[in-house]
Structure formats: structure tokens, C-alpha cells
Image 1: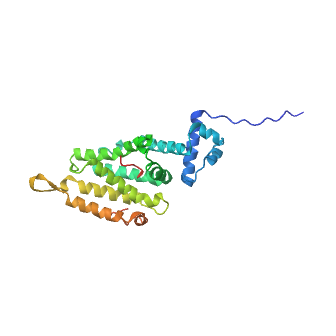
Image 2: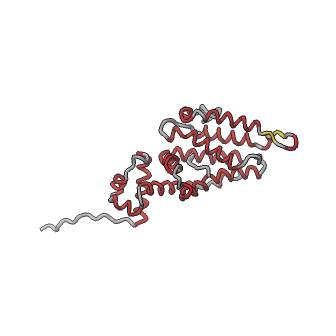
Image 3: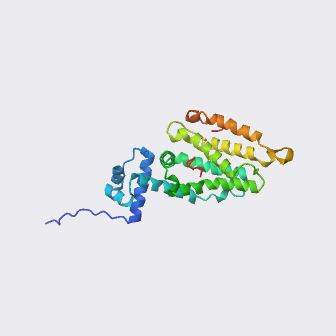
Length: 256
């Protein structure tokens, strides 16, 4: 008489591995469907668990998505950006802007979730992701501050303003791509942003005026030209290479 059949057993994953798998599957589905169309029943099915198990570890779908976004920012912060030091302000700035644009290129769905869902939330500044974001944008501010300290850049424009201009350009130039309505060139946009900021603030381009005051007229004119191009909004960002002179451009990063 044959032995009775036994049902195959599935190894129960440890808690940390189970949470990691849920977040990994959620991130992949977010890229496929976007945050509005993602449903936890499908996440559970792909993980081979019940939907109730997801809510054992996460309060809601939104809580799950926030944890995925926080994990993403944590990954970005762990990337070693110290390699930009010692290469001069222009090259360091170019590398950081390029990295920001590349992150948007790789994760448009996560970028969209942060920009459209989390950032407008009244509680955003009390979230952990706000602090992660602030630390992320601080890397650009650090490069600009070092440029002033070494004498490559003038110090007559606040660092925070320059930082906001950089991330404002990144956000505008990638907006059409984030919405799935256009594209952008990472290299062209990087060169455009880095060149405008560096040339506009370069110490040897300042024109002394009476009393030692420096003329910011040329800087203002450069920025006005960039602003005029950005006024076209997403419609003006769908053709790479048409903006910032010869160039075109999260970032998800918030101006903290």
C-alpha cells in the first residue's frame, strides 16, 4: 500500500526577509502600474502571502509606499559621492546633477509619488522622508559652499538660492518624462544646468563696481533666459536638446 501523500510545505521566511520581499515586489509593481493603480492584493499574490500579512507589517498601502520611498532615498544617500571632491567645482557639480537626473530616469514612478503625493501632504515636513530629502539636497549645497571657500565661486548669492535653482531646473526639465509624456537627455541637461550655475557665479566673471559692489547683471540675464524657457512648462520639455541653449533637464529632491 503506497504511503499517504503529504502536502508540500513552504518555508516560512523570517520577518525581515518577508518585509524585504513585500517592499521589493511593491517597488517593481509601482514601476509597472504607478502608485494610483497599485493594489495590495496583487502585491500579496506575487509574494505568495495573504493580503492580511501585508497589513501585519504596514498600516496601509500608503504606509507601504512611503517605506519604499524612504528605502530609495536611503539607497541614494549611501552612494559614495565623495569621489567628486578635488575635481573642481564645475566637475563636482556636474557629477551630482548627473546623478540626480539619472535617479529620476531610473525611477520615474517613485519620483512621481514623492512629488505629487507626499510633498503636497501637510504632514510632509514631519515625515522621515523629508529629513532624508534634506540630507540629499545638502550634498549639492556642500559643493557650492566649497566652491565659494576655494575662491572658484563668488559668495554674493545665497547658497540655498543656488541649490533651489538647480533642483527647480531638474524638476521642470524632467516633468514631462515623469508624467510619461516626453523624454530628456541626462547628459545635455546636466551640462546645461552645471554650465549656467558655474559660469554665472564664477569668481573671475564678476565686474567690480564703485564701492566694491559686484555687478550681478550678467547672472540675472542668464537666469532670465533659463526662466523664459521653463515658462513653457511640460510642453516645452518633450524635445531633448531644445533647452538651456544646447541642453535640456528628485529631481525628486525637495528644496528643504
